[in-house]
Length: 315
Image (cartoon, rainbow, N blue to C red; front, side):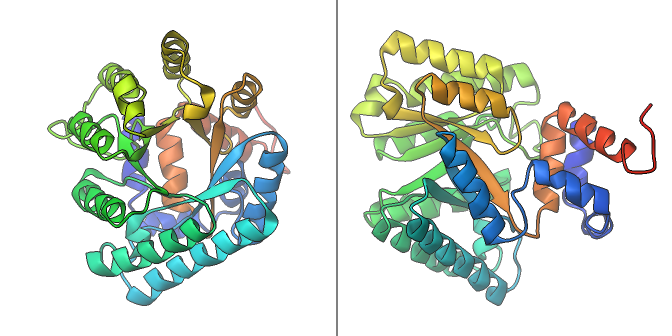
């Protein structure tokens, strides 16, 4: 119920307007969001790189309904890629298609994404395409496959383990020699579309992880990014990798900025490639609410932060 509550709030513009003005909440988001500016985000990348961690930078913004706003969103990614190259940083970029204008026009969105992918290719970098709610899966995969067909191999797409359809999608992408970030899924979905119970999502996550790291997938040149903070999922991945004698260079773990920071460094120290998903920008509200929905510990952190404001005593 708590998860559904925060997922519903994540889509509420009136609540976003109110919450975004609350100083303590804005400050608390710094645990999960690198800042509102590109300079702040790049500062975080340098610090993470110094700890042996790679980064995926995400300029926050989704559900764009204006063509000019979509173009400005793409412009930021162009500037971001150029800044990453100029700074010699170990970071790729991650984007949402609705931020690139998918709700306006799919062809417009593709134009903006292709522009970013072309520059990333010249910079020898990678573009990660986030998966949004189930309503966008078909369009997202169409755009991703179109990029593959045009010869771009520097593109990765997210697949959500809680969707029933994901196993078939993964199999198709393996056949194409694609690149996939496996996540559990962070949107409210009906039970006819997604597994309603965590145990079933977890079982499907492990099944998809094994499929993505199978000898057949690796023979196709497929690349897997295993994105999870769930220790059981991490252990299952490590056990399978050891069992199959898979080199740490053949896949990577991905984790979110501000969550399980010590575990990120432990995995890196054990020789695994770890990439930290780092968001930044002023449109942090939907992302922040989904983080609260995913992990009750995040909500407890928020409440503790608010209770311990100057002038107030914690219980």
